[in-house]
Image (cartoon, rainbow, N blue to C red; front, side, top):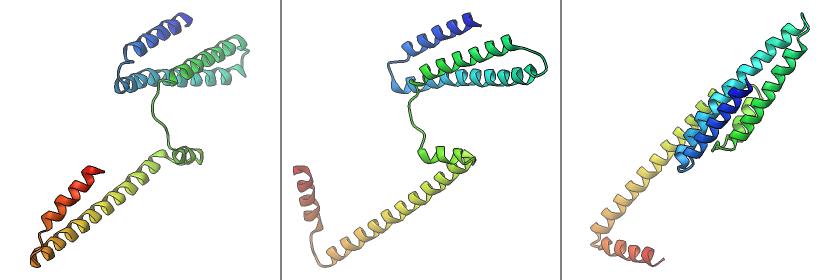
Length: 160
């Protein structure tokens, strides 16, 4: 098992070196590295749970010790590799998980919130467009050349 870990560690380091040129590639590479490692840690944790349950029946202190050592080693590898991961988790999502709530509900609530904000933004843009059209119409009705104001506005924005 130790030789497999060292081979895996070597291949992980090689993958990281090869993908360091692009942050996008690095992000996908870190995911490709971390996901299998997290899966292995989870499997090791389940194996440790089984070993602990069985150790009450029969004395398996050596097997238990080896299982704990393997878990610690994998967690250390995971900690080392996690520095490659980019991004962050919103604090309110972590609080949601701490309360025992389903993270999918959080995601759905955020999507709903963003859809409402997008709808509100669209309505505001339509209102501004309507106001602009009304203003142009009024300016044209009073024979005011509104293009002069647009050109003057553009000159001011370019000078700033």
